[in-house]
Length: 517
Image (cartoon, rainbow, N blue to C red; front, side, top):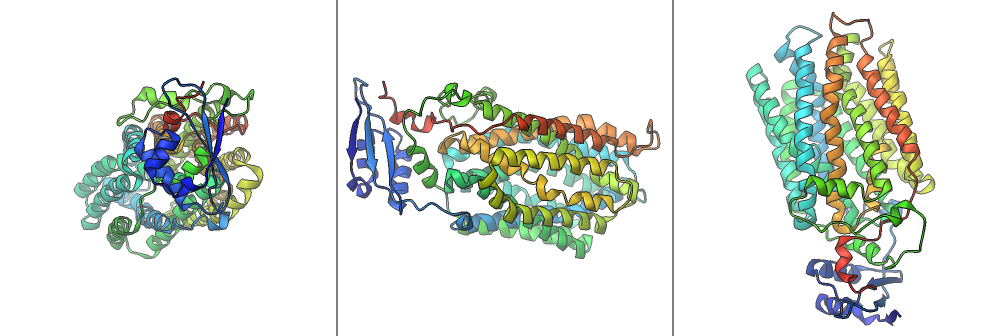
């Protein structure tokens, strides 16, 4: 029979008293939970802890009167402003160089020409190699952030990302261009996935479970705002100054992060986690029935650990498949679209910037204002399907563009297609515990990176072939249409996803539940 104790004075105890009362063995878990309790403000919550006595019989349920103010969507940015500022500056610096890099590449490899197969193949090779490195590095970085903290690990991608931009800021001749691409491939392994993974894990530490979809959408909106600002700046800056300004902003982002960003301690996530009952209500749901305890946190996660985690629930498995096919289509599109537009409509840096501005403004508006309003109403699963359907239309319109205004119209569909990534990330975040957020987000980023490895081998030869003079038939957008079919497959898989109960068996609280019968 379970013993129920009601104790409000426990809030004022230190973490040692809390550890003895709850029989928690992990000191970091106990300290973080004590801090969460001490900082709480306005609702009553029951926290369950196991009884770890020698006979392992019975369990103790201790009821704490915890004050936790449930944040509304409009308050999600409270306490997260420094993270948002870092994300904005990082993406401002990163995306500023995108409109100019195509012209720089063409000038270095194929001067005076609008078509260059070497540039297409080099872009695909860069994407594949970077994706391979990201697949290995990102889950490791995410897992280490669970142990050493998000801020400490954020320093790596934000610092190494400065180096390639500095090279082109100094010189853009062919020799320096090759040096840029070589170092960019190495630094991209740390930057492309780790930054997003760590920021999402930081948010999951700070935001309650019910508000994460909106919070992830706002984070994506801040990234899009940095994208818009960087692209707009590049639109009016000469190419020679674009890389210099980008490097300066990247340095500013690192300094700001080290000075002002506060380390997360999982306060909100821990309150959510320990507020769950020890034994969930019996259900026929596949996730709840077949979800074993997650593996203990290791310093170096293996491939087996990643596969085991992603297969631990049906929802995670489906999210993995949707991520793979959606990322494959998106990676293929991004690798081909600028060269396609240059070959078919003779776009230059300014027109690329205009197109990216439309996409960025539409995406930022949607993620900052539309998604936070829709996510609580219709749910992440339906919003995910809507976003993937819009992505299909977006890609197919690009592939059959018959006039120069069609790409601009297609870019407007970004308003809905940007729902995809935050919805997947929120769904995954809800399926794991507070000390597995970095690992889970790293695994999903790794799957996305794996798709970006496969994508160039499929789409890059098609792009080079159909943009060349030896194409089997005149359809320059054929490779982009193939990307659309990959996105269509992701949409089909997303329809099968449904909302399920969260997985309540987490390794981080297994030490408090060993006394269960």
